[in-house]
Length: 379
Image (cartoon, rainbow, N blue to C red; front, side):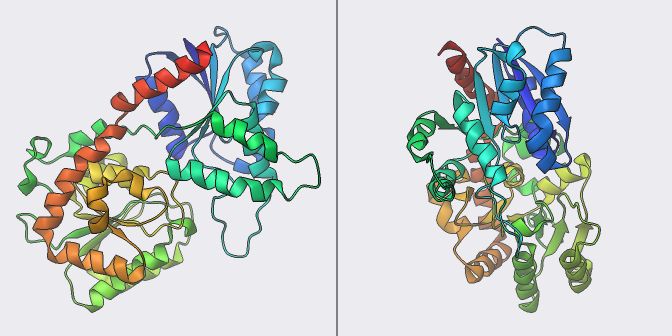
């Protein structure tokens, strides 16, 4: 089967997902993309540009279209009707513009979640990257649709729910193995992390975006509390940063001083080594539809301290949630302090959790994607 994967915002996790699909699928996956910038314009105008690219392509007629949530799918199907008439379409939702949290003081523009909604109506199958994502979308959707004056879309919701399915993101976890310490892949815990067998204090890792929705203020407040208790730790502040002046990160770096052993986005090699060196990975996010960065860290035997909400509970086996998930700020500090003062127990838990996220590795996820695509094409 020839799949045309359409991604008008081809960057970051969207790009990693698309390239992973193409690399690991048993089908032929052709990428049709636009650069990852101007996301609002991509959602409004990208369909016209993509349709023009479709008209110019020399490849065979696709058997199926797999489009990301940044595509205005009905516009694309209409503008490329000669090339895509009768071709089934699957919409993959990395995110949505209805339940994505906004910065303080910003009002939601319903034009963008309406593009998401109309794309779901046009698709033959709708895939969400987590159960939390799917549930939160359908909880919020009726209130959005009630904003409009007549011809209610509310009766259409059950039809979209019937064709919706959870399909987690595939992650290239095996690529991280190259940086593993000797013996790590054989379960030799003593060679992993800084708190086992070394003199360095435990390493806490921040590997998420330096953005408001990841709530770095709460993270740094927790580190300040740990420092005030005179608990030994180091911190690596990695992850993508799109801002010229990340003020809360700069201020924390000044306060924490020599505890900060890495500051700024890490290149691929450095990032892989930080994952394996870290003892604890932390999230304080307001928003997370899946959690690729956390999955990568857990795979590398890093103990997770995560909110008991969003998509995070889905990443962990139920038996580990009490130990790793916190309810409030006090719980965050308590769990961090426990992990710092019980390094052997935290490491043992991290060893066990690694295998629980290995299910997201692309070689295991790709057959699930392939089966879903084949099912849609055969319908």
